[in-house]
Image 1 (tube, rainbow, N blue to C red):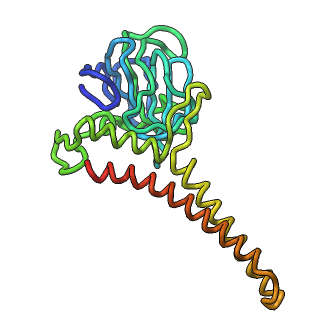
Image 2 (image 1 turned 180 degrees about the horizontal axis):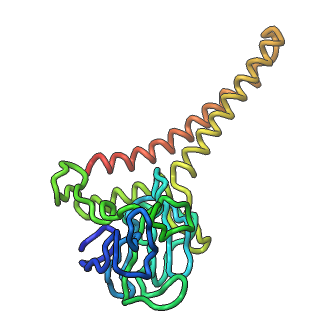
Image 3 (image 1 turned 90 degrees about the horizontal axis):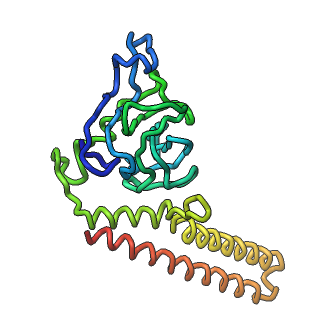
Amino acid sequence: MNSPAWTGDHYITQPFGCTSLTVEPWWNIADCHWHCGVDVGMPVGTPLYAARAGKIANVAYAQLGLTALGTNQTDWYIHIDRAVTAVGHNVAKGELIAYSGNKVPSGGATTGPHLHFEVQTAAPPWYNRPPTSVDPSPILFPTYTFGTGTAGDADLTPEQDSLLRRCFNLLAVGNYDASLGVAADGYAKTQLLPRLTSLNTAVQGLQATVATLKTSGGTGDNTAVLAAIGTVTVALDELTVSVLAVKSVTDKIAAI
């Protein structure tokens, strides 16, 4: 099976749901041992990608949990060899986050190199819980793509897809800083938010200065008012520069 979550075409070795494997937890409601995810056989070192955008919630030996953006669900990558991200890192869909392996979080051995992908509504660090497990198939193997909605349709070229991902990272979540072990903030937070804050502060300063002038009956020195207006103008100019930078990105999106 091909999936946005990994590189290459690999076989499902254990599907989601009831299983004859007694090592899996028993679920009374289903009256069976329950496999809480999907096992996919793949060589050690296979690149693994974020199936959905979100925030890294857990990284430990042989495991990685990613809480999907706008949901109460966590995507779990189990038996990984190593992660290339850290807790707290915001990731875009399709971003490299780990490499597959053949390790067991609790120690021991597997039946062979594979990825166990699981979706849980239980809060991290909990997984392998049947009542809160969710079928991951729609996430791993989406039937429809952007655009016409035709099954199997691919409306974006690899170059277009790459541009969209770069734009998302630039504006929203930023890039991973290996030296800090966290994600850098996106452009919207590092540039637009400070400019908006500065403008708001400048406007409040102007309002306070005008109020002070009014209390003097309008006979005071208006130099302070002119200075406050100048501060507002500077803040507006700085915000305009940042907005134009964002516009250059959105123009690229509109052009694809």
